[in-house]
Image (tube, rainbow, N blue to C red):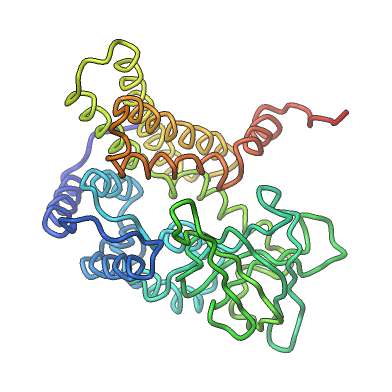
Length: 379
């Protein structure tokens, strides 16, 4: 891979850096898991959209600027380095959008993408169910054929952003007689539709980062099906590859955390070689992930696709995130209670090995699909 940047890429990076320096709020926004914070983050997304920086890699007709994958990675690097607000629209722009670009119709793209780019519609991910988490093929919520569309029934849980979001996307079983990975349809639905009930789930801090969604005969038109009916599993795999791989956890996030960790260690007292080595390991780990991402960008630019290898990426970044935050808490010691950014980050990092498919499931995928090992049998 070539890490030398041409003049136009350097100019793009400079523009992003200057915009963020002038526009990132001086004080952190309220938590996006509150009604006030959610709307504050929505307003920030519109500030980005006004500068065509909310979705830089998209086509201009949808609100982007047709930036290359390399430019997108550099944008993310600058974004996290500037300490910019979290992306309240990330479920849409990082998960649903790549799926729509691959499987959506021209009508869906024209209708959905500009509103997503401006955060007019913020999306919740409605995949998991009480009996189907990492085992996504075990879903029981149904989609029943109706005149001009589908009728949805069932329950989704751990739906991120659903407490305040506008729309949701998820899988539904449309052919109950089909095999587990067949007979599924990928659908979108508004969260204010008749028959939809959203019940927020408070986290440890009392804020509803997730919600349960109950669907009681909710009508969805055919125009809100992504891909072909009963072919939802194939469509969903493109979403999960993006969630586990390139888009959801860009290297800029970990590079910025590693730099904050270095700054924390530098400003503190000498705590011995173990702490120093842990900080160095964090920097090495974040740098390795950054270079790996450049390699992924090179492969995608040459026509490759994200596949089962995204499971390796997911295990790596989720465990790196925990390790960096644990090191920070070790350095802070008793003062950790006063450093909410590190403690909040640590609590969130603990969810990394669970969401986007548990790391245990990812290791099974790595073993079976990448290493060719036989499926494990129970005793």
